Image (cartoon, rainbow, N blue to C red; front, side, top):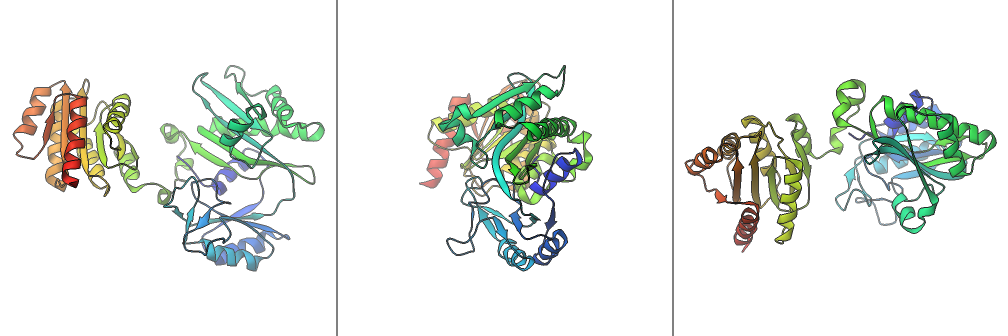
Length: 400
């Protein structure tokens, strides 16, 4: 689960990490009031969306060349004017894609006098099963570009869970960033604070870009991007309340209510599969035969008839779907349960696109019989290769 920058900074502040002072705003008037409350000679107005590259982004509704989603202004009146231009408008960045995201909230924070910019992130290293730090002197840039062009400028290390965070880890960060003296001590303290925040709240990603040194010698988290492990949210009801559903795909929200693993994609063939590996293979073979999957959807090993019905409804709710492929290998999951769920869903929502069903495993004959006797126009398939070819052919036939 992702959260907004201002929410991330509140969490970091609670764990002692140095962040700039700022206030969230949901209207231009609130933005002006926030600036007046903060005081100072400069303010930064930041669009709050779940995507990076906001500063270089453009608003669909504004003239070409207009300022992006992060603006430095001088007065509360300027803050209000910038807020009026941003709120309710669609910000397009490299990470949002051409459709962009509508801005519904802002973060107004005090300006910072920057001397140096760095990059620091934390994530779970699956290979070592440890929390890892990624540090670079190239702050403010896309870390992917740095990794491609100057990999030697990126330092990574992990923390042994047996020892936890130690001063030596902070010194590694300081050394990687070329910090010594008081700034080196600040780096040690910051590293410990970030590690505690990461582990205590079950984060899966923490990215600070940039981490800055101000002209008065302070190390400050100028930006913060945070994602949490959704499987651990039951331990953190306060974190779960930070979820902004307006930033998520409506179909993905609906899927989460039924504990379905669903990710919307850009293709035209909807997929319903049990098991993540089989779902990936299904998407791959659809691409092999020349078309693109519209989603990743894993109904899991113990799905009920109601769960399958919900999954089918979510797929058909996507206007881009031109065909549906159901690919089930019944181990724990029974093929007759899948068949009953599919039939129930079709009867509830109707079927306007071709549907191919491939069943194998537990109670496969019972499942095939249910579909065969349903009277619905369902195309049966013997194996995955046969299923993929049939759904691609059916979609192309419909489009012809």
